[in-house]
Image 1 (cartoon, rainbow, N blue to C red):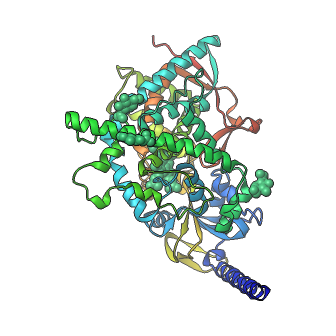
Image 2: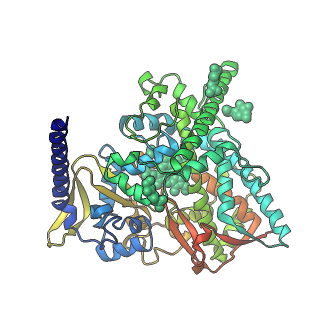
Image 3: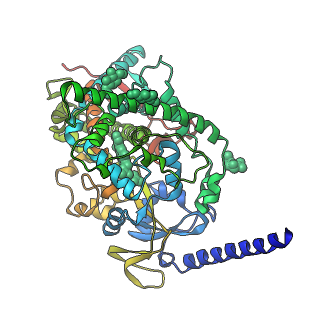
Length: 553
Ligand code: HEM
Ligand SMILES: *[C@@H]1O[C@H](CO)[C@@H](O)[C@H](O)[C@H]1NC(C)=O
Ligand SMILES: *[C@@H]1O[C@H](CO)[C@@H](O)[C@H](O)[C@H]1NC(C)=O
Ligand SMILES: *[C@@H]1O[C@H](CO)[C@@H](O)[C@H](O)[C@H]1NC(C)=O
């Protein structure tokens, strides 16, 4: 026996050493390493934290190192950081080459299963093809009254809260808006009542399961970094995995039930009233309709088996799934809930500091003669539109995202870079396995594009946005906030109308002031960039505000 084990071990060690050498050789000869860039903070984590933090460190980096440079990831492996529009456009458009890095994909797949947020290649294309129609303008228009209905409920709750506190209410805007957007995505997303605004109701099964899973994977940085190094470590279980699995079972069951009743409702309305239109009051049944629509080739339809092909996720637990569409339920929750509530929170933060703008907006909103505007009425309000654009530019909820090259590639640049040896490059060679950072907020705040006042909140800059901003390859409004290319945010129209409806109802009904000095509020990014109190970070993400009901005279 030993005679065999010995040589096998030697062989295995030799292969491991060989692999290590090739990895090290590739890394050490990588052209990215010749680029200037910030010093690494630690050999283990590199500067990964700073890179994702958004401002201020990211914009400081731009000032010192220019538009394209390197920073160090875990184990000081070089990563490319670029806000060069041509480079970003290349990386975003060539999503056949640049994928979501495995650790992020794996962490996401634990939460959402094989939904559109996680898949790549042909499967992703297929999912987007079926899903895109559900997010069209006509479809979002039909959801607007769900938005407005929820916001009026919020308005009434805030009014009685202010009343209870003697006229002016001190509230944490972030948590209220978080619960409200949860209610909205539940109803408008998949016909599910969270009832999260109702403080007396116990949190229901799905919101508990979701929050358990959502908070189960991300806290152990050591495990996170180990999983970057080798797939072997993806089998490392943390104490939270067992809890997450339980919650995953619950989420899977509810997802299947929702999908089942959605299919039944669609089939019934087709049978009874012959309705085969792409109209519905929630995204899930729009999906079901799009997937069963007559006239689309059979190969384009998403089949149940598609989602069973999950073997490329070497995760140490197997969530139960039986249909593509039910993976989109947690996908909508992850992608559409905190992003929108955070964005609206930042809008109120900005307006609370600018009373002239707040008043101007309120005047415009009162020019509409209804409490329950339609999507078209909301979109016809020019100042509201500028406030939303400027909020999403200055306070991008997602500050940065990463991609990994799956083959060797050459990234073109619009602005050449000079490496540390003085060579000028008009493109950058990147090797298979290397990471690229797409800094969203750094480009949204880049002074050479937006001007010296780039970091200030000025809605009126959208009266004539700078010429140079049209080179930004974003899907919406000359900014990167919803990303660009085939993987841009599918839900941006949904989110914009939701934000506008929220601001419409809230700014008409209340005046807003910060309850603490503005300098007390800092931004903290995990994936989404949320407010935090400088003097009390342990309290978690909050935005305390003073609200006073506004009565029109
Ligand atoms: C202000 C609000 C929002 C912001 C800032 C935002 C931002 C983003 C960004 C940056 C991405 C790209 C992520 C990546 O590829 O790494 C993305 C993707 C996505 N978003 Fe949004 N989002 C918002 C709201 C929503 C809403 C409301 C929904 C759904 C109802 C949604 C659904 C999605 C989905 C499904 C994807 C994945 C698309 C794909 O990979 O093909 N988002 N979003
Ligand atoms: C992270 O997980 C590893 C392995 O499961 C464990 O040994 C370590 O104590 C954990 N660290 C923290 C901070 O939880
Ligand atoms: C879905 O509905 C079918 C009948 O339409 C039923 O046989 C099946 O058990 C249901 N599944 C779930 C998970 O509710
Ligand atoms: C939404 O759910 C309700 C039950 O809660 C059901 O009666 C209705 O048919 C569902 N609507 C759609 C479009 O699935």
